[in-house]
Amino acid sequence: MALTLSPTGLADNHGDLGPLFESDLTSAGFQTLSTNKHLAAEESSTNTGHMSALLRTAVQDCVTSFLGACTYTSPRSAPSQELRQWLSQQMSVWEINLSPKFLEKALNASCNYVETVYAHLPSPDHRRYVALYTACMFYAEDIGENDPDSVMEFTRRFIRGESQPDTVFDCLAKVLKRAYDFWPPFGADSIITGTLDALSANYIECTTQYLTVKPEATRYPNYLRLRAGIGAPYTHFLFAKSWRHSPESYLQILPEIDHWTLGANDILSFYKEELAGERTNYIHLRMAAEQTSAENVLRELVSEVSDTARRMKLVLSDDPELLELWNKYMQCYLEFHLKTPRYRLGELGFQA
Image 1 (tube, rainbow, N blue to C red):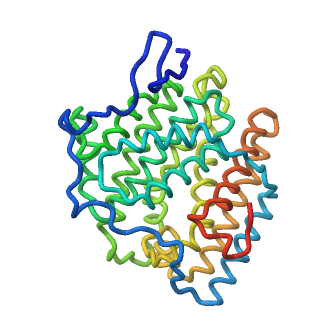
Image 2: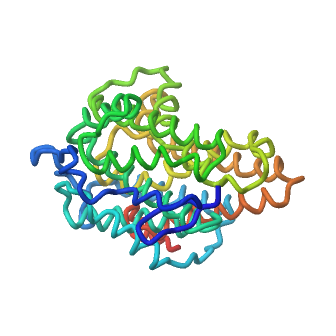
Image 3: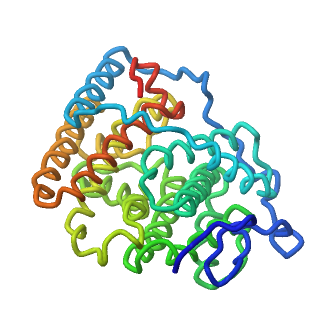
């Protein structure tokens, strides 16, 4: 189905399907979260937290080593004012108590992600879809800290076709239902199931803050990360419906892309998470399970993820088009983390 953009939203060649958002969501029966459940905690750009000089140096060394292993060269991706204006308009009708600061951060991070990693997608509608999806998932991640039950309820309501507790989750439900318009059936299935998995895992993360990870429970950190990391949806976003006839040519590299992406995020997010005092991320869970230090886990992770990048080149050596897509994805994913203030890597001397 050929997709074009109508003045009011996403449309197909059978006519206007209407916007993903409706302006009268509340009057139609959708309710906003009560004020005591709105986002209370925000990342502070001035938060300095506490990190030992030894750990800070280890993080710098690991990030430097990782960028070198990936032969990082800045793609210098260009911003899209059209995308930013469109997403801002969509978010402006979120009838929920969100601070301007959160909205600005979610908007910038979502657009940065699409402008770098998914600029290759074949149409503006594809890129808008990923940007809107990303903004919704930023919200879900943050609201889980204060209202985890609303996150856990999403899947049940989605499967039953029930209204969601607020306009953002209602938007996410509508976005998921449009996945088949943009991605092949296998990809759309993975986008939907991966999202539901991630929301359930987010609930687990938010409600097990004081869980003691037992020594030798070494598979648990990876189990939780595979679900919470939203790896499958973002991997499948790479391959639009119009890209090749079937997924056969890239099926075998999907787990490799997942592994590299999640590992790269763990490495490049650790600095800002450590300063924020997060103790339920992959690196801390693995520290507890393996009874080792953050420095050791970081170094091991850099080695493991760098090896995945090395093997990807070998696996794709007979498919230049797919190899080019992978290389562009890898460089742009690194660029996204380096240029997005959320990750605070500029404080360590890194630039996009």
